[in-house]
Length: 241
Ligand code: F6R
Image (tube, rainbow, N blue to C red; front, side, top):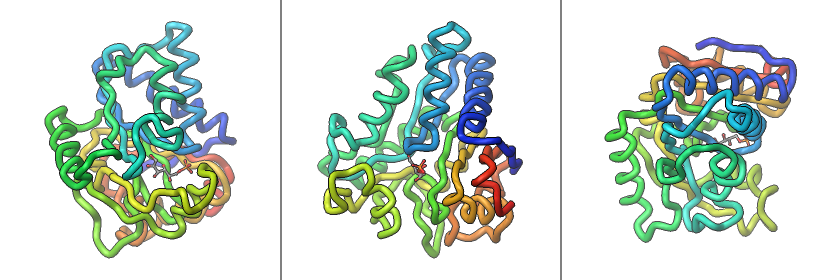
């Protein structure tokens, strides 16, 4: 695992966009693993700008998102489907038919998770997986636990994640209590992983991910075992490293 120190959010976003654009320039058929959240927004905006200028293209890429809330339809403004269209898919030349986000509105979420896992496996797993990290060390919606989850699964969200996400909903009662998330094994099968972190509230999680014990209590710590994982963190997020 390598740690790249960025000056600030803008610098982190540009560094990440440089790596992703180099990946799609070298390998136009790249399978991207994508994340939502505040952290990658700047990266997506930078990539959209470069794509508009003709510096890179996503026309031949496909993508698989990490997660989605259970119970939100894909046109719900807080759904991750909606987020991805707003901040990335609608801004670049990717073919929307080649983008995939778990189906939060599925009648049988557990079966939909299994199907999603089969689809990611059949595609051959992401060439490059983009990740953010939660303040409690979660990746995707893999929360601290006493074991590492394997494939895509339904997760009961912790109080800290519900509270962190409540800023995006009208009230904390509107935050879904469950989500669908790729498991740790699915994430670890990506050929390259890029973790982004920004802000002082991520400093402990970044420290524990990079230097802590490998434990399901800090799900991101397993990334130490990945053969090609890069963390790009800004000064505030690196302050304990
Ligand atoms: C989102 C995801 C989450 C976020 C994490 C950080 O798809 O998988 O693990 O990456 O919660 O969120 P932000 O970037 O909003 O701090």
